[in-house]
Amino acid sequence: MDAPFLPDVNFAIMIWHKSDIASDWQNYKNPEVDRMISECNLVVDSQERLECYKPIQDQIYDDASLANIAEPLFTVALNKNLRGWAWDPALTYRIYPMDFAE
Image (cartoon, rainbow, N blue to C red; front, side, top):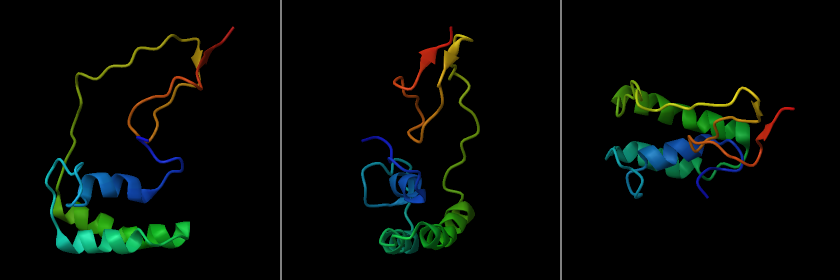
């Protein structure tokens, strides 16, 4: 699975900012953020979960761990009759919901 079935704040936070997992390719390390991520990951209620992650988001922003400015060589060309195309949380696209308009 490369993306969550439901949108969830934990997905991006976990794969980019938790220091003890393989996908932390930017080598971000903040023990307090790790602790908060582990704590918030246990929250089930979606609204409480969002509230729990706000301080984590603020800390990551303050740490300025990564700044994506542009991806100049990435281009997508689409037929004007293609319907159902959209980006998904994995920063890619899925083929199965697409079809061509008559």
